[in-house]
Length: 274
Length: 140
Ligand SMILES: Cc1cc2nc3c(=O)[nH]c(=O)nc-3n(C[C@H](O)[C@H](O)[C@H](O)COP(=O)(O)OP(=O)(O)OC[C@H]3O[C@@H](n4cnc5c(N)ncnc54)[C@H](O)[C@@H]3O)c2cc1C
Image 1 (cartoon, chains in turn orange, cyan):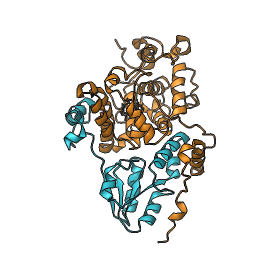
Image 2: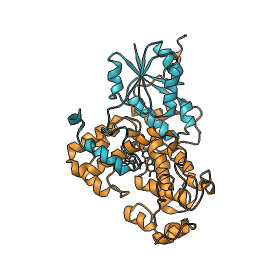
Image 3: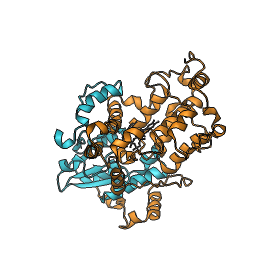
Image 4: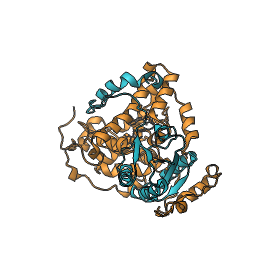
């Protein structure tokens, strides 16, 4: 066989990691089909320095108390874990250096969620793109749209907090777990779009985009991989978000109401929830 | 010389695949923009992956991994980290037609039996927590 690989070896300027503009130019050069309109780069940088800095901020005991709050201490390690730059095992070991097993348990349990989804991916690869079960929303899969509307793709739904979460996804490639749940529920239940369309959109943008954690979580929200649909109300967002999230009634009207009201609105074919 | 294919599911030189391949093995990363196109990765995802690859300070090639690796390895064994990704496994299957390919598992997070119940997370966690709450050095 002829040796052709010398042609394909990339020449790398030794200083490239300290010059992000050059680095982005190089990524563009080696991605010839990338849309020229796609110019957004995350502030989250790849590499071990950044991963180690995030690990150094880990506080496993505090995590358990505040992990559901959009403005508190989660690690932001998922992009590094997703690409195997840092293992869940190493992170767990660090957590156990910092805290006893009991206070560290909630955090380690979250790491185990990743292992859980991976295990299911291994056992049932078809679950990644196919409905595991029918929707339990009173609708059939064919009642849901195949594609995401433009206003979701561009973070201009007119629902202020959803637009903020989507903007964060588009600009940083990261979202807090709770924000992912809110957006996924908004897409599936408020807008009645198939979970697969939302999952594809997340995988394109999330730096941690992972077929198992992402798609199976989408199915969980949609109810095709759980016994009931996940949904929320504005009050819940208010409770878990900080000052930075716009949770005013007038800019988020469709999300406002009691759980019973919203359930009746979103799932009119189901028995009313008491 | 044998080669280690460092792919996008295992971008680390601490992975046990490096030990399995031996000290003189050469790790390489391959930038396959057609795969990124097929996955519709946005620029920010590609930049992040490229930064992780650069950080490893190993040769980076551009193109289809099966072609580059079979050319580089020239009948030597190719080592790589085990993955669930159908794209990665497709490359491995192609390579196996002409080369010996050894896949190596990562060190486990916890020891969980193969038949552990995965229907509910908390049942799975009940198995996992027996070893997940112990530092790895104590479970080796
Ligand atoms: C709709 C939806 C889509 C998601 N898509 C992805 C995805 O593509 N990739 C991904 O890694 N996670 C995904 N998750 C899970 C979770 O939201 C992220 O792992 C978490 O937000 C990452 O942020 P962090 O690193 O700050 O997490 P932390 O709270 O600091 O947790 C530490 C680590 O534990 C793991 N982890 C924590 N929670 C979960 C979880 N619920 N499921 C799986 N692993 C978890 C991650 O590896 C994470 O880095 C998704 C969740 C939802 C609801």
